[in-house]
Image 1 (cartoon, rainbow over the protein chains, first blue to last red):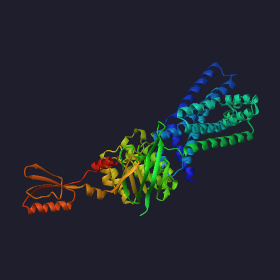
Image 2: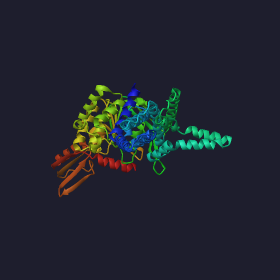
Image 3: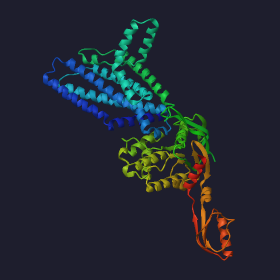
Length: 259
Length: 303
């Protein structure tokens, strides 16, 4: 119970910071711009462009939610160390893992709030022009939210090993380029010798598989059915294992770090 | 009396920006007993803050050992009983003092109405009741230091470890702080703090520990030290011989002498002799010795 209270207090502070630093306001402004964009499309006639508009919307949603997740997570620990706000926190009877986990939860909630707010604004913008998402959209949202958890965990881990700038760059490269890297690894693995194939497979397994959380195409197309429940279960399992591994990695560096 | 702090042969080193290892604390051993008020003194770079960080578990010693109330320093058990004020007071700029205290209070294990009441009370104690809901980023350095003091007092800790406690405070703030710390001491709290304000140290402490270049130099009880530093200046005329009582004397005017004594006994003896030789006492002044001079001299010897 005490641990939950600690995590809650730390996560709440991260969330308050995101709100008061106006990070999430940027999302609202972007949503407003999207409404204006949708109005323009409506002006030129959106009929027949429904799939295109929906595809564009989920792409924008994915892009901006990733940016929020990375920028929120990457400064959590480096900022605390640089600003020396870590001292009064760690002077309390809490472990470094509790601090790390609370911060991680805060980053996850902040990126979820940003993502859901933007999704809500997008849905309203599209509804104005009678473009409706189907129920599979809910599945897209849930999968994307799980993907954001992995992005936050990876970014937090990177920020404990490198500067915030390097961590953010690396995280963006992974978030937007991992599917390309993975495709390259699979192709290289097909034509490689047995030992090299094994190595490629290990590297592939170590890379975050962000693309599996992207159900944008399914949500954008008309008449596509929802993915089976076991797929969502598998995504949840991957999220827990991969994010857990990233948190352990962050903690292994942070637990003995002199501050 | 049990030890609130026990450090034994403490060695702490860290890697500087140029990659070289710096041994900031070299074999430091000391004890602070429960209920004591101890000042931790040394020039800049002496290793004071590093020692305090080691006591809080922020830095792991490379050798030696330190304990807080019998628990290894840095463990959750030891930190439960400690309030800590860091050297540079930076608190979340986007939170208010009340929210800051609420956050730290929750991490301390307080919650609900009890936490809010204590947070508001502490803000009043440190003189920040009017600024309780202002954002920290709008507060002055001195006000932020007060937030720091309030957060250190949360949960009524049995030991207060304060790094540069008077930093950023104006004379009024220092006086108020003195009252707060006296009240904590009277309540049985142990105080261990570093400061460059020797007058504050003198007014607050039972004992001082001096370090230089990460090594222990000297420890002194404040009342003894003050007595040692105190001297008496006697101005007289006449022919009394005081050379065996003091070598520190001068003749500012022909026939008028000024002699300085380090003990009251010597002074009384001198007064007797002046009376016996029909001399006249013109003035007697008791002077409190300067802790600053003692500090400079002792550190100079240790360097």
